[in-house]
Length: 301
Image 1 (cartoon, rainbow, N blue to C red):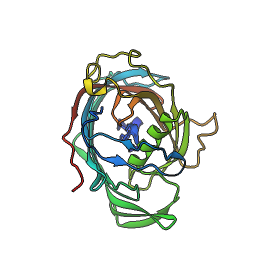
Image 2: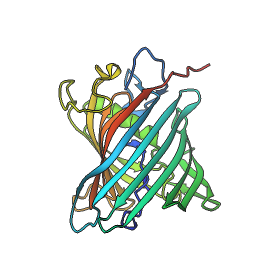
Image 3: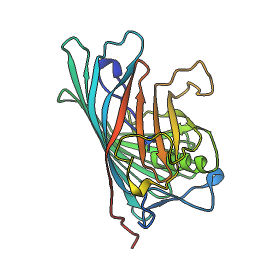
């Protein structure tokens, strides 16, 4: 899964699908015939990256604070519903409801809902989202983007009719996840490219820096969550992944640059994520995987 900015006015950035984009972040029963996302260029390899259709729920809590932030507690939930196949493309229904408490009797609730679709070739991307804060609508976005002939064109219908071009190097969210997994398989540790997911009025592009850690052994980092005793994940490889999102023009190559936010998670080879952290610089939110459902595959006709 990107984010709608505004943490300081008690809004959460909209989450990417790693996990994001990602996200995050963006389990596998190998007997299931699930959708296959192709990998091209430097990421090509003999075995295609196969992402499983699944529904994951993460319960949110405050993981820590820095500086003089007034946030005393965080609660909420993320629902990540991923589906599709190589014929119909890949869809994501995402919802994040978050409540922030400043400890002074002041609370604010953010309800972010988004829906995206990306074709198997990572050429076409549709997106829509709305963000409500305390029951008031603060942002709505709708549009589509297309890679075509060495250019990337975007057409928005909300918040207003608008067309514009992006850097043709931008990567859409599902492709981002595929590239991370493909790099992890071959021992890659660093990825660096711009990502577009239609967030922040539909015009935001983030430069991203993805750091992939050493492959986690099956008996390492045992956690009490929905993935802990899931037999469909028992033999699936996973890696610790951190994705930092920088405002366009603030190079992630410079060590003095602070990212707009950072997402961390453990990423399975099939696209399932656990142990989520959302770092907004002055506070960190933890996301515990509390429910994981694998969907019946939808094979190509």
